Image (tube, rainbow, N blue to C red; front, side):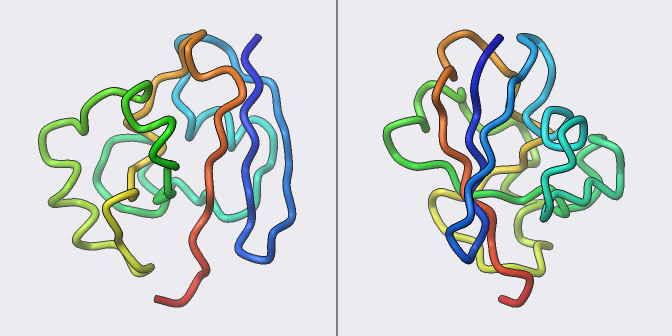
Length: 107
């Protein structure tokens, strides 16, 4: 299992166990992580699983998928260079210990 820590906008942290091959979004849903809504179920048709990935983990999460930046443009929260959609990040052993920061609800 891979440990991933989700950090809420208020600083509260929740560390969960993830299964290799699942998406970070599915991991969040499986563990009732607040702030990941995943309204489209991971089909990259919304941006309700938006998160921020620290620079130290960016390379390990892989490149953004085609269309991910376009969908992030639809996010209701602030988009930065660290923005990703959790539905597009697959859990690998290399992500063990990764920190995922969640945006505040209001941009």
